[in-house]
Amino acid sequence: MIDVKLNPPSGTIVLSRPQRCNALTREMLQQLIRGLDDFHVQKNVRGVILTGSGTQFCTGLDMHQLQQVGEQPEEDRWRQWREDIELAHELVVKMLQYPKPIIAAVDGLASGTGLALVLAADLVVASHRTELSLGASRWGVVSGLAVPLMAFRAGAATAARVAVGGESLTVSESKSLGLIHHVVDSDQVWVRAHGWVAEMAAGAAEAVQMTKRLLNETIGEQLLTWLSVATATTATSLTTDAAREGLKAFSEKRSPSFP
Image (cartoon, rainbow, N blue to C red; front, side, top):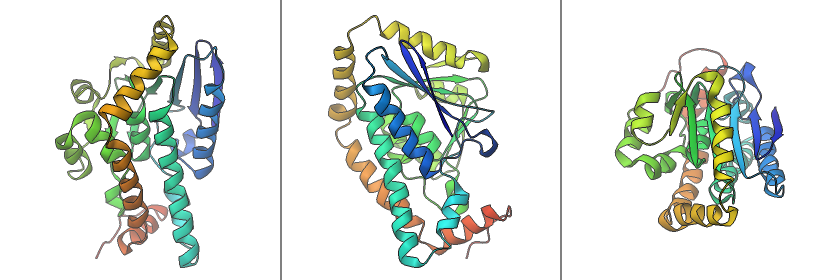
């Protein structure tokens, strides 16, 4: 479900589950972490590109898998949900602390945890049909990891508009807010990202690493704390009656009926 490709000076990790809009299973989260670890030690890889196959970038965590966990005994489902959300948290933090630049090459919808991956990347190249959204609340769930990242990248007002107000951001809006850096045609998204890595490879790798640390760990000193709180909030939201109904409705392809 994850493809890894080497094209020095870039390495590419592809979310390859187009039949499910690249929704993230726990296995995919583990594979993403391993893929980053593999590229970390390869000296000829100066930057990592994260992209998706098919017509969507990533629609977030796999709701079917979350719903299946909900059918387990109470103690087991709480443990598994917590582990799944903590795994997503581990991936996001790894991206922020990764020594090499990460470029999200986005074509299509990025929502929920998929949006968190875009926001955790250092740079973003997107197609004209890209859309950023947080629609989990429609199913009684909190997309917690994306909220602090959105606030960090674009401010609390934009985070409230998307997370609380439920509005999606078009590619032009996202670019004006600085969430997307370059907009190109769909068939040029990876090409532009790869070219950007090549441009950065002309500089010193150590300087890039120190700059990332300055941005994400010094200027964004509180971000890691926010993400830890967001992880707990997301896991807790999955235990509510609203989430139980929302996940069941999603699985049954119907509108949820909240109390």
